[in-house]
Image 1 (cartoon, rainbow, N blue to C red):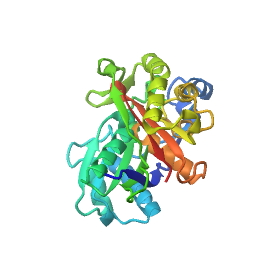
Image 2: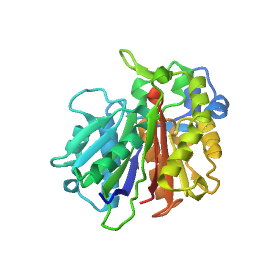
Image 3: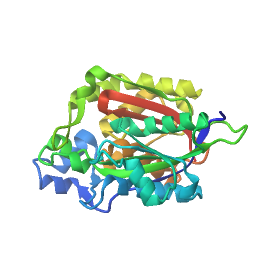
Length: 315
């Protein structure tokens, strides 16, 4: 019941980089049009032989190595994804098999772009309850598999990748490193972001999502800070779902995190759905832009018009 903390993070992106100029040769668009509307310059695209569980396993292996742990130290694997093709074995079980995790509880969590922060909260609750001691939490999506590459309104947004975190129980007397989650959804507007059909295709009502994100979410993000007992101006970093620079920057500004580093990984990675938050967080840690113990707001939002946010301490 002492709480949990993030021990280490890691990320992985496929080697292939798709630029705005490349997209201009595929659909009626341009570098200027894309940058001015969503702020994206490049994105990474996985090949046909790189399934979601492979992306996830690469990121998880890096997080394990950074934590100085082995697969045998893990007893829970949670994978946040909405682009897994197969129903069973689930992605978490496949990741565990790739890594050699011996007997974990293994579950997928599909809350689309808010998946990682939902999974992180689930791991925190599980560790607090004593049902797990160390967990691998992974956000991984292969959005290129569900994209209509002839639709310029959506194909310019997406990228593939994975990010992971190792979550473990705090030592007795140690302050929790993962704050209380604030989560919820707007079910009646769930149609605004969709991955539906056969084959499944990503679609969204961009203006509705933009209005919701920039008007409703700032107060929810502030409430997540309040639950953690942290004022926005005391945050070292803000890592929002990397949906669109025109959403990230106004939301961060309205939050009032005036001293925080604001993650803008969307510019080089695109919208990687559930991968976007751990991917951006891992890069901030890798570059030394935040240091151990720094308070960081993680806030996911998107599909189902779901949201989940919590303040964590940087590993």
